[in-house]
Amino acid sequence: MVMNTNIYQFRSNVTAHDPNNIKEIVSSSGFFSEEEIEIAAELAEEFLQKGIESGYYFVFAVLDGKTVGYSCFGPIPATKFSFDLYWIAVHNSERGKGLGKLLMEKSEDAISELGGNRVYIETSGREQYIPTQQFYFKCNCIKEAELKDFYAPGDSKIIFVKEL
Image (cartoon, rainbow, N blue to C red; front, side, top):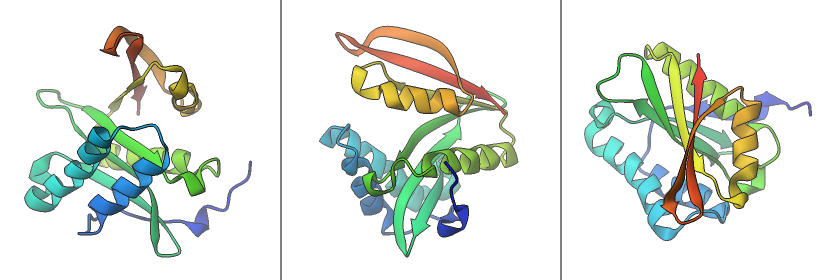
């Protein structure tokens, strides 16, 4: 697939509208519970209150003035160069167009600029998340571990890592 990357604008600043933007993006997937959706938005709210002291950084993708994707990441406490990718999500209306890969690349660039050289990513092992797992493989991430029954019986935590 060839994609015109010029159609998206990217920003790292968090606005007062972003908690709601995040809720809309994450909700559109149909994957997440209300509690998970609230947690995603809370990270942006915490950033708005504390700034970089929150430990959260963001990349937002905007199309025609509307926020259609985002990532959230931050340094892992007590490590020298390791970061967690907490969230990467694309609005359902933009899925399959390469935006997730662009967000991943922009996040990796930001992490490198912040001094990070390893990114850790957690996702569910449920069948519903197979496309998510395939996405991380396509982004050259390595499946580092699987913790059986972590989230619930039959729902493993899969941990990916990517060296930058």
